[in-house]
Image (cartoon, rainbow, N blue to C red; front, side):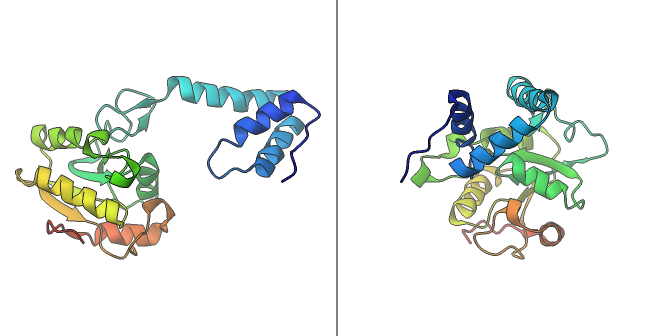
Length: 207
């Protein structure tokens, strides 16, 4: 493979940084950098400042672990949401996907991933204990498992089920309108919305 030659060390440095982003190869990185160079200086500065501000000031909600600008996110602090209903998801992207359906008015709990021994991710690496504390200390009537329909997702569902089975709380799972292996972020809004509405009781078995 030919080694790319740049006329500017600054250009090369910028391309190297963009190429670190997921799904961005060096050719795409170069195209993005050259696009920024064609923009007015004010727009490039605004872009850079937005990234710096995001990294410096973004927080995670102390209740649900969703990304937030404040200690408690807007969803958790919204009095019109149903606080007795908690939807358990893997990542912040899943919260966004479910919110886009417009059919769910409860709260969330972001685990930060799923149990995956192959990737070195165990229960202690996820926000499972804080979920148990929420169920134990709050008036929660239902917990919805909205994890990806993969082996890792089902294993995580089962683990959490065992943790929560001691409490008087309904446990449900998205209907299998989602194909096995599907991730919520890639599921169309209509299908995801129907899966939420038609959720079924979790039986406490690995699917």
